[in-house]
Image 1 (tube, rainbow, N blue to C red):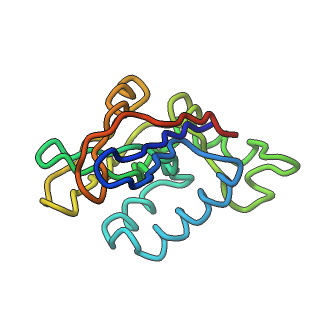
Image 2: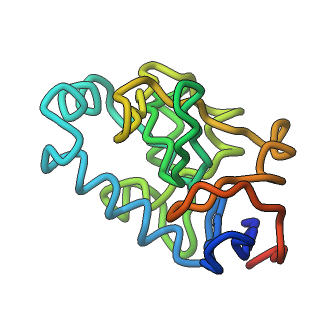
Length: 167
């Protein structure tokens, strides 16, 4: 369910990692993300967008984002919002031992579900902390860009040192 890349900086010796996807605690991460959106952590506009449709979903999986302007990178949740294609079917959808109606909310929505059962309604713009430009998300098709990432401390470009396929 996730991929991990480990790096050892040849310049300063720093160890750093990139963890992508989701793990076994995804249902908790998903609920925390929804709660953060509802609490306004991502701004009032994002909270309002989330409330536009019943059963709105968020992409809470971890992705790599790279700034094309300055090269800074970060791993973060996608945070884009999706509306269900068929909202009438959601209450009867089963998650474990209960349906959405019995839970009172959607416990989690995986990327597969977003692709097949939802439509993108609002794309979250990740801004670079260094230069303020929009960052680009690196998807599975572009994971070759993960092969060489600069050290977050000194900027030296490093090759992957370790690889982990987790959960």
